[in-house]
Picture 1 (cartoon, rainbow, N blue to C red):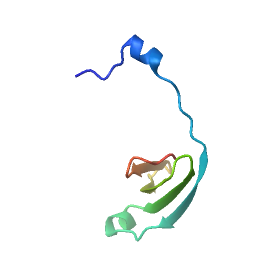
Picture 2: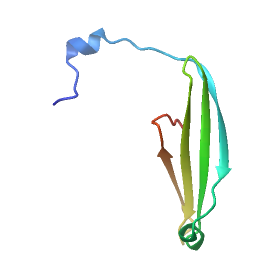
Picture 3: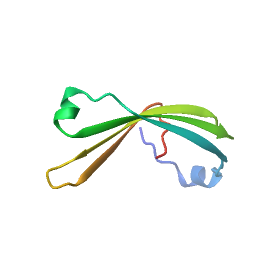
Length: 84
């Protein structure tokens, strides 16, 4: 099954824009033993959307450092609604 749209189908599509805002609450999560031992920090996020698009999303942000002091950031998406 191909997900590509035909040229005719692409020409019939139109762009829809939604306007609004969102509130985000970031909370430090209780670290696991593994996270403590490996200098990893985890935050949970709760986002509430307002306006043309209404909803909620929940996620996690995980950060850590290497011996070279480089940063590693990873976003985990739940409910498919994160826009960080």
